[in-house]
Image 1 (cartoon, one colour):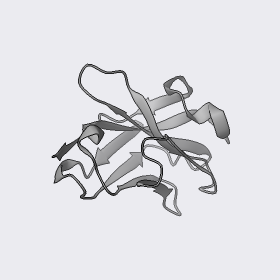
Image 2 (spheres, rainbow, N blue to C red; image 1 turned 90 degrees about the vertical axis):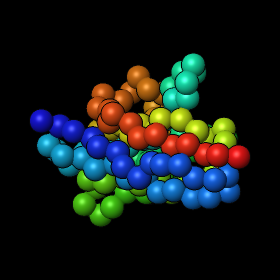
Image 3 (spheres, rainbow, N blue to C red; image 1 turned 30 degrees about the horizontal axis):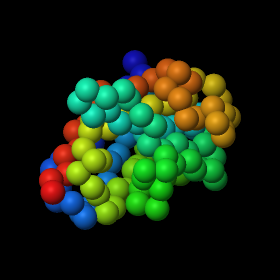
Image 4 (cartoon, helix red, strand yellow; image 1 turned 90 degrees about the horizontal axis):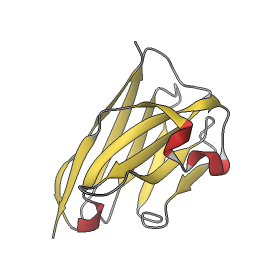
Length: 128
């Protein structure tokens, strides 16, 4: 059974940092891009960051660029999201996902439709 499990969420003050992890089991996803999305109450799920299958290309939403960093380990089973300079508007449930098509990159990584495996999410709350 394929599973993606997020961890590392929590409560942090504005300006603080958190590091989210997403561990995969059931398969390695080594040939697949991975992404992070988030959803705040009453809002649609939105793109945060993505990393291609090789780890050589990363994409970020404008609202996190320069503050968040996505990475993946050498075994390519775990993806990380380092979040610095957190703001109250970053408060949301953060979801990791694995893309459905191998070796995808670029604009295909921005939308939820391209991802077919999702974790259950981890709550991030930033207090002002």
